[in-house]
Length: 219
View 1 (cartoon, helix red, strand yellow):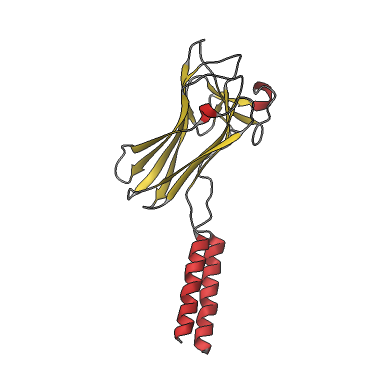
View 2 (view 1 turned 90 degrees about the vertical axis):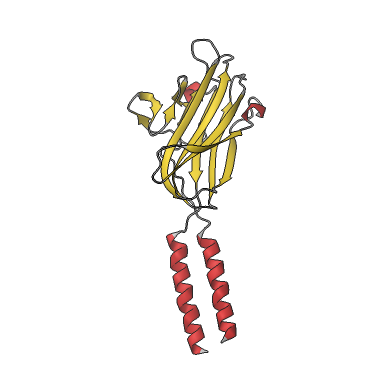
C-alpha cells in the first residue's frame, strides 16, 4: 500500500507541473491588424503617442515584410525634432504571488535612426486600489540592434511579489527618436503571458488520479 501512495504522489506532482506550463497571449490585437476608431493609423485596443502610427509594413517599412500579418507600428520624429514615443495596453487579469509575467515584442531598426533607447515599463494594480504602482522599467537593448538586421524579438520576465494584483499595464517607451530618411522603428507581434493551467492538462490529471485510485484499490 505504501508503494501505491508513492505512485499517486508522483503522478500528482508530474501532472501539476505540466498543467502550469500553458499560457495564452493576454493582449488584444497583438499584431495591430485591427484599426481603431481614429482611422487606419490607430491600432484598436492600444494607447499610442504622436508619431507612433499603425501602418502597412510593406508600404512604409523600406521593403520589409511584417513579422506577422500585414500591419505593424512605426515610430519616427514629429515636426522635424526628436520625439518621445509610447505604445501600451492595459490588461485586467489576476496575478498571483510568484507568477511570472512575460512581455515580449518584435522590433526592427529602419533607416538607421538615432534615439536614447527603448524602455519597457510594467505597472500593476491591486484589488480595491485604483492607483498604478510598481512601474518596473527595463532598458530594452534596442539601441544595440544592428541596422538592417531584420526583426528581433525582445522578451522581459518579471516575477510578481505583490498579492491581489488584478491588472497590468505593459508599455514600450522610446525616447528622443530622430529620423534619418524616414520611418525609424517598426514594432509587431507583442505578447503578454502568465502561465495558467490548461483544461486538457487538468482533465488528464483527474483521469490519472482515477486510474491511480483503481490501482491502489486492487492492491
